[in-house]
Amino acid sequence: MSVTNSSSVDVARAASKASKRLATLSADARNEALTAIHEALSMSKGTIIDANNRDVRAARISAADGEMTQSALKRLDLNRPGKYDEMLQGILDVRELEDPNDDLVLKKVTCPIGVLLVIFEARPEVIANITALAIKSGNAVILKGGMESRESFIAMAIAISKALGDTQVPNSSIQLLTTRDVIPSLLELDDHIDLVIPRGSNELVKYIKSNTRIPVLGHADGLCSIYIHADADPNMAHKVVLDAKTGYPAACNSVETLLVHETALEKFLPSIAFSLLQEGVTLRCDRRSKSSLKEVLSQADADSLQSATEDDFNTEFLDSILAIKTIPAKEDPTDSVDFAIAHINAHSSKHTDAILTSSPELAHRFQMSVDSACVFWNTSTRMADGMRFGFGTEVGISTNKFHARGPVGLEGLMIYKYFMNGKGQTAGEYFDGEGGKKFKHEKERDKDREREKEKTQNSNKGRRLSHALNVKNWG
Image (cartoon, rainbow, N blue to C red; front, side, top):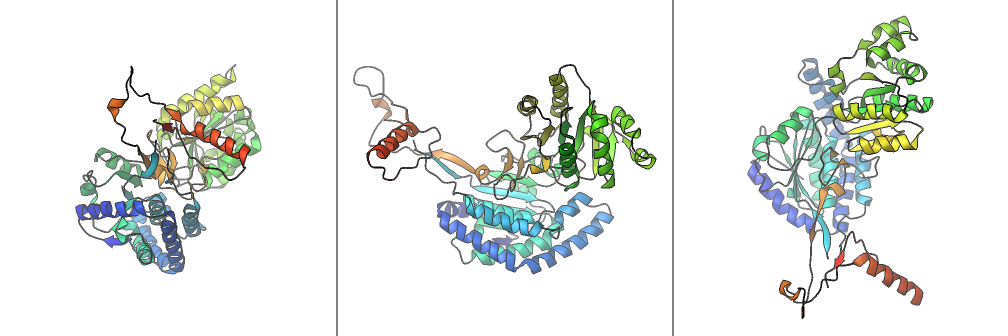
């Protein structure tokens, strides 16, 4: 990894050149680099935490002056219990993933996207996450961090740079830009940069999407909802909602809107509301839920309830605030579920939404109808995370509808191309009629099954593995 203040064009050209070299490295060479990075960041933890503490102290002043949000301040802090260790474990998890470059026989083979531009705010751990995934997938990456995390990311970059010096990975394949005001010029380099991944505020994401021709992978908001149906398990609903709201309110997978079936207002909501209030969560309730809660809460808790506005159901609070809306009871239970689905599809940011119900049929209807990247049944929205999905770590959450959606890990940084190996065949030889050759278009996986069956029956010696996705023999 190199820390540079070179021009945008020079950085992009160097990254493009390095990406060609990185793409040819063996899985062992890439894994060796990840091991070296893990060891370097482990040994440099004290230095990096000291640098991060300097960033946090400066950020607290900015937050006090209103120049930085509290949620951004929380994301900046690497001292949150377990955060640094999770970052380190993520590198090891990526290292143990199966190498994504498996040949497919037409041949269809996976390959790196090329050069990634990752622009992030207040998330110093992004450097370790992205570096691990970029090296494993064979992509070069340009990192541009916010000034609020400057001390942290420079300390981490120095450790990573030293680690890569003893490996086959070119240092220029991972570049950290310290130059100020370079984002506009970077976004113009569609000849050199293949994908932009923003990690930060919705203002940052929207700005990038509006100012570049380069494809953008990411999401602007994390407006997540949970719907509690009438037949949900009360204890489960209590546990899930508390986790989704209070586990880490500043996270993009934290629940922001709670939809409650009308008949569940008295059964479920009081205990959930009481626990949320005890955790310091502000509740913004619609008229029906507010009236119901006032009947059972203490006077002090009842007085703390706020009236929800329509804007609250369109807001990603990133804070200890939860909007509550009542879903009317219908004679047909599916009508209530459809009402909740309609609300979510109208207000959601298409990140993560969940239903709590004991009915597999209603859960399936919800999951098939909600147009979000992650749609869960009986679990917390906080489960929408690359590490929890088993991806090792993630570059972010994508709400796009192209090759990668949801938590984006190793596979999301890969694309594919086709190889065709022949023996002098030409297109003119294949035609209908006398003398013309015919395309067989046989799926290689079917031929492999027959060969495996024959091998097993005849000699039971070994077997050939094939990772054919939709592979064809072109005859």
